[in-house]
Length: 345
Image (tube, rainbow, N blue to C red; front, top):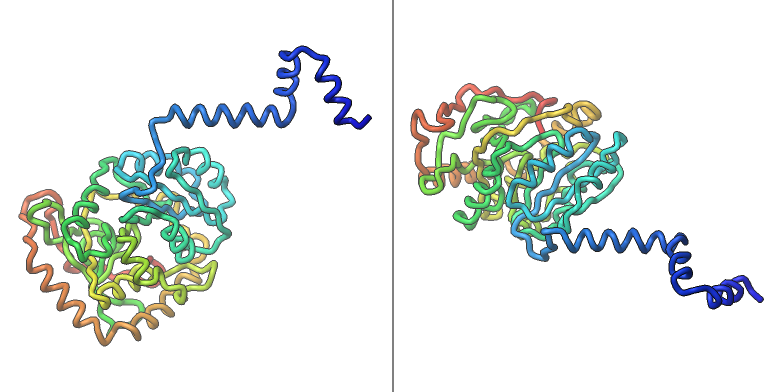
């Protein structure tokens, strides 16, 4: 008699309750108990899966494990229904922490092996189901006030041709200067912590204006526009290299396609928490990529930047000047420092 037949024969002679207990003690039985417990917990959760979230947030993750719990906690306060983490080969335990935090039905974890942001963002945005997709980095902690996201959604709802929106670095370009100095900062950003946008949407009361380009992050897209533009340009870096100019490049391409790019202000993010990854781990590649990609974008856009800036000026003429003495009204982009090669994202 085979081993299987012997076990079956013995089981037939045992009381039903004993058989059930023995089955629970097997490896398969233990797995069944865990799966059923997990299903009960999910069924009791107030969160349900949706195929059609209004907004998806994508976070690039690389060795900032200590930021993850706080970052997710701030994102949970917003109206975003979907979170996607791009865990790009961290060695500090980030992957385990993301698994601990991403417990809702529209939470997703994408794992890759140090491909860097151009390719991981492109992959994640193709997975996202939100009409609006926001991309963030794991060293930037959002403010406690969740209006930083709801204000962005309100601007997209009002400006139907707005394809890209940012709330940090924004720029007006000058491609006739050297690769170390490519234009002038507009509003707040890495070059001027105390600067502000000078215009405001008069109905929404949100500091906002049209700009040549904005930088990550957060940086928001209408997903349909992002896909129509072909996503971030793979030519800007090889796999494993920083994607310097990925954000500026897609903004300029958006203008050239008849779309619009804007910047708005929120309560400030806490920036560079734990150190900026590309500066810590790939600063030489970052500097080389900046100079190479400055030339690449210059060749594609320099002859048409005047038309973009004329359109930007016309659109901004329809907005209101930010009132003196109002919230964040110390607006001045004059004299803002232009970043050097090592300090540009």
